[in-house]
Every structure is written in structure tokens, then in C-alpha cells.
Amino acid sequence: MKTHTSQKTKIEVPFRKIQKQSVTDDVESQLRDAILSGALAPGESLAEARLGAQLGVSRASIRQAKFQLMNEGLLEFDDRGTATVRSLTLSDAHEIVEFRQVLELAAIRLACTRLTNDTIAALEENIRQTERESNLLKLTFLDIAFHEAIIHASGNSRLVDAWRVLRPQLELWLAGVHRRHSVVTARTCEETVAGHQLLLTALKTGDPDVAGNAMSEHTSSLQKWLLLEAEAEQETAV
Image (cartoon, rainbow, N blue to C red):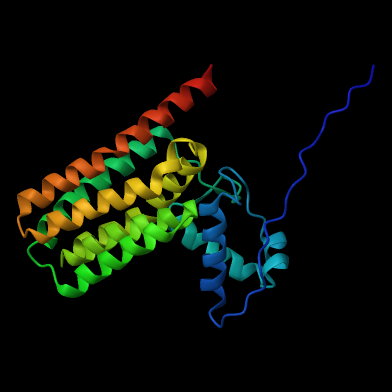
């Protein structure tokens, strides 16, 4: 008896033709957005010829963009030189969270003594935008932008450099977590706004200990995502 196996139809990612003068930057931007949104899924390979045709650029431009995204930790290359979207492991997630907690604790302790009116205004505007946002991926970006503003407010260039290394993989992990656990993230907007308002209040005290404690409490909430990821991994292994 013949059996028929169904093949999943590949849905084309709706890339647009490149318009900007800086071709490689635009290619990077579109590929990065596709990865973070999940349109390009973890483990999916990026064929230069197909992407070049979709984007209307040369394979060389695709290749340059892929190397940049590899440096950011969003892509990885196998022994044959094939680029695939990085699949973060639970161990990766733990390291990302640990790195973030160390960086942000140091940053907020410095930032609260160097806080400017411009920084306060930027943080308040970020909170207002978060209150109005309903798109989960955009909420993720606003969340990370709030914390990046605190990193910059620390006035420490080495902390900023370390954050730039962390940010792409943090975005990749958080965006993926939010998609995988959409039921739990239903209140993400309200929780993010409340948490950021507490951080801003702590910053305004000018007390490093108060600000540090607020950040430690805030980032400890990341543990729930690690637990959810661990449970999901165990279910997959069964």
C-alpha cells in the first residue's frame, strides 16, 4: 500500500526591494527583523541566491550582511559554510540573563548619580509609547530600549560596549520566548509599564542602593522565563 507524506509548504518571507543607498545595512536590517520576528525560524538556512533575488541585491551584499549577523550572534555557519538562524539553548539563555543582570545592576547604580533631565524625559516617553503599543515584538524592542537608555545614562563607555554585544542575542531570546509562551505574555504591556515606572522612581532618588535593589528585583523576573523554557525543553525531550 502506498503512503503519501505531506510536505509543509514553504511560506516566502515578504521582503521588499532595497531602496537605501547603504545596501548592506538595509539587507542586515531586513534579515535581522525577519529573524527577530520569527519569519526566519531558528535553524532555517539562508540561501544567498534566493535572498538576493527577493531583495534585489547581489549575493556579495547578502554575504556581507550574514557575516555581520553572525558577529551579533543571530546566525551561525556550519562546516560547509551554510548560514542558519541561531537556535539558542537553555544554557545560552542562562548566560544571557546572567550577563544582563550584572550589566544592568552596575549601570543603574552609576546612572542614578548622573541622571539628566533629558534621560528622564526619554524614559518617560518610552513608558508612554509602551502603554500604547499592542504589538508584542515592538513591545520587546521598547522594553530593551528603556534598559539601553539606562546603560547609556551610566556614562561608562565600556558598559555600553558590553551591552552592544549582548543586545542582539537578548532581543533574539526575548522575542522567541514571548512568541513561544504567548498565553503567559498576555499581560506583558501592563507588567512592563509597571516595572519601568518603579525603576524610574528608583533612579530619581539618586541613591545607588535603592536603584540597585530595584533593578535586581526587576531582572529577577527573568527567572520565570527560564523556568518556562526549561519546562518546554523537558516536554520536548519526553
